Length: 416
Length: 118
Image (cartoon, rainbow over all chains, first blue to last red; front, side, top):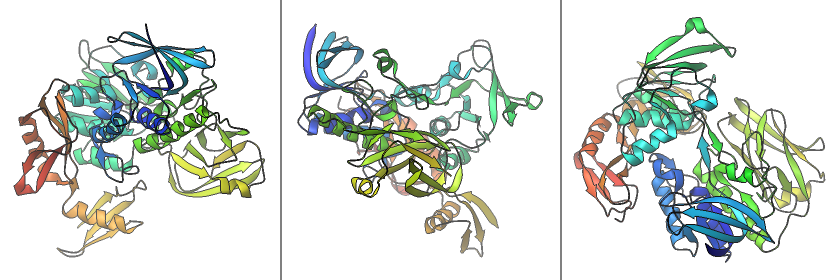
């Protein structure tokens, strides 16, 4: 078996992995990216729509363009890239970590490294995860798989579609299917509010007169060999109103019902996971419970925009470089989600530098107030014009802020 | 005459009402900022969209080339644009930003959004 040595191994060559690797390499460390596909870019390759890069590049790019700009930066750096390779296992050895990568060529490779960054994104929730009853015909796809078939393989998954889930992925696929000539007959959303951005409701549904059924579920899939239709059931106060059930004939059902961080390997090596995000519990430097093992991007928590993934992953890379230089957080305190807050990442903070927080709320509200308290005293507040669960909220506390804050201890973040 | 719209200029999603005061003057209400007024007027006079699609590609690495219109396209030209895109086939190499289709009469250009070397 071939053995190679690096300061940092980055698992995943998408937006997150590339940014993390670039930030570590910029400080002069020896970095490897392991990517299971045949090129860098990850999920961005199949996201051919526009809307990427407005924050980071100040331009509106497509997914492939965004990916390419980063892969060009990686190419002109001295990062080593291993394509078509999957990391099978990681073990602690001496002061460092040993990871085993498997590929057709050059076969098994042993990576002896000091740090590992998990940046391998998410998997899609599927029919089994949400438990839709009915027969098991062909024609049921997760939305991301359908997107891959259409945009990368040039295949048409079906002609008459129903989509479950009104998150942005579901909405983007409604437009994509319409533009390739399919008829999208409905989008069915279990929640009373659309999960995706308003602009996508307008551009992807209203433009094509696609009905959106809020507070509805698909309660049955019909068809023997191929999907023939679905039964749609309205909800009232969370209870299925079976007497108001109706059927929609279709040959294809697309499931856009959420993403789950792909933490199989992280969990296997003993990384503790956060119940709310599905990602690792991390300290203020985005390091997991295992020394030298970091996490960023959608694997840590699902982001709204790739620009935010990039920003977080650059920061993760900077923390990795600090770790390699021997820097360790001195005194960390917990960050706890309070009222109306679903989660907050990272799960700890330090008082000696800028801390950036990402969080999600549980409620929909205009003119909300975010409040951060330590030991019952408010140390920071921020007015928010509009909040909803599908929109990530961010804020920072700087070193200057902490100079004025006397209270030390765990912080609780709430929204009213 | 009036028309109800949802503003897409920012995540607030203001519900706009466009009223024709006369044939040329349109009044927008319901917007919380000037961008809403601008969006509302364009949306009722000449709605435009960015279009993204893929075209057939002869290459040893990928099967479809992702493409995107340069700027926005009038909504009523989208069907024709897509139909024309679906008839063309390109061969690698293609550079990102290269013009893959031109509709000069409509002022529309479609650009490659990926570089494919072979």
